[in-house]
Each structure stands twice: as structure tokens, then as C-alpha cells.
Length: 268
Ligand code: NAI
Image 1 (cartoon, rainbow, N blue to C red):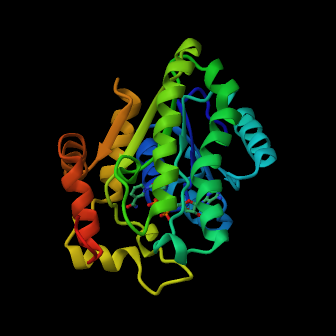
Image 2 (tube, rainbow, N blue to C red):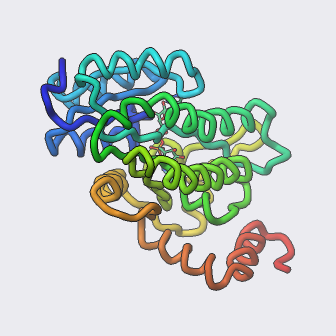
């Protein structure tokens, strides 16, 4: 199915969670959506929900640069060379102490969450340059401005995505491409079931114990919609995330103390 002059968006991690909700939102608004994910059966289910006339499917591992070239070219042939927005959303998490995570778990987070985003920015650049008023959207996290225990490698990738986005906003302005960084607080998706080989504890268990606020995928998709139509670089999903950003800026010591206390260790 071709885009037929509609606005177009290419979304990684589109088979689940925030990526799927974003694809549904933009399709509802009349955009043609390129759904990319490493999960082929999940992509098929997503495409069935969105409808064949509103989307294309791209089996893509964001770590694979050749696959990026192939799938962006396939998308361009359907969109007439147009790419209004590229959303680097695919991401994974492993939850547990740094020393309990395997080397593979650490590498997997770095490779998908950070290198995958860089790969996407580079693979999509020519099409974004060719499309007037285009936007690159990178999904980071509130774990991209506060270091959360048991999420050290994950936090490192999200801090990096925030920095990459800020630098690219300046660089890509000379191509007429806007850059947006999305920082969700916890959102109700399968990623919250993340654990690690070294522990039985899941991120969701800790959230439940701490009574933390969890937002919906529709709220996250709405922020991505607003970010693409707005002017700011950084966008936080959820009031709890905005409160944390305020505390991290003006009371960084107490935010770090709370993180230590949350582990039951010495607070200072
Ligand atoms: P999810 O687990 O529902 O969706 C992630 C999707 O990425 C899945 O469809 C998965 O198959 C895909 N994926 C994983 N590895 C891939 C790879 N190598 N190549 C291509 N696709 C791959 O998770 P969710 O929550 O929707 O996550 C989306 C983004 O939001 C991630 O970057 C995550 O770090 C970020 N985020 C999520 C939060 C949450 O609480 N759910 C909070 C903050 C950020």
C-alpha cells in the first residue's frame, strides 16, 4: 500500500507498547505509518489493527545497519521518498544490580537503546532532509536525567540518547530537520516485566511496592504527537516525571538520597 501524498512516519518498536500506540494515533490522524520491529508476528498483529491501507511492515533489528538501509529504502518506495517523522522508539531494559546483569544483558541495552538510535538517525537522514518540516524523535526516559538504581546500564543509554538528541538538534537544524527527545515516566507496557538473569525481581514488582504512578500508552503517544507539532526539544510523559525533573534540577542531593534509601542501604 502506498502513502499517496499523506504525511508519513516510520516507527521502531511498533509491534508493542508506546510504539504501537503511536502508530495507531498517527494512523487515526491520517498519516501513513511504517511499522518496524524485530518481532515479525507482532508486526502482523499491529498491521491488522491499524489496517493495510494505513501502514507498511518492516522486520528490522535496529542494531543491523544493512537492515536499516534496506527497510528505509522499501519505505521510501511506498512513500514517494517522503519521511515526515522518524521515531526511534525500540528499546529494552534489564532490571537488577549492575554486577548481577550478564555481559550480554549490558551489551544488549547499549546496542539497542543507544546504537540502534544512532543507526536510525543516520539511516533516515537522507529522507528526512528531502522532506520539508521533518522531525527526528528519539525516545529516551526519565531514566535519562536521573540515575535509577538497578537500572544503571539502561540509565546510561537513556542519558546518552538525551545528549545525542540535544547535539543533533543543533546539527540537523542546518538541514531543516527538527529533533525531539521524549522522556516517559513509567508507562504500562511489557517492558515493566523486565528482570535480569541474576534476579527474580521485576521492575513492576518494585513499582507496585513503591506505589509509583504508571501512565497509559495513549498518554505517551499523545506527547509524541504534541512533540512533533511543538517547538521544544525535551518532552516528559507524566506529571510524576515533570515533578522528578524539577526535584533533580533544584534538589539533586535529596533525589540521590531517596534512590539510596529505596535500596534499604545507608542513606548518606
Ligand atoms: P515494549 O517492550 O512494549 O516495546 C518495545 C518494542 O521494541 C517491542 O515491540 C520489541 O519487539 C521492540 N524491539 C526490541 N528490540 C528491538 C530491536 N533490536 N530492533 C527492533 N525492535 C526491537 O516497551 P515500551 O515501553 O513500549 O518501550 C518503548 C520505548 O519507551 C523504549 O525505548 C523504552 O526504553 C522507552 N520507555 C518506556 C518506559 C515505560 O515505562 N514503558 C519508560 C521510559 C521509557
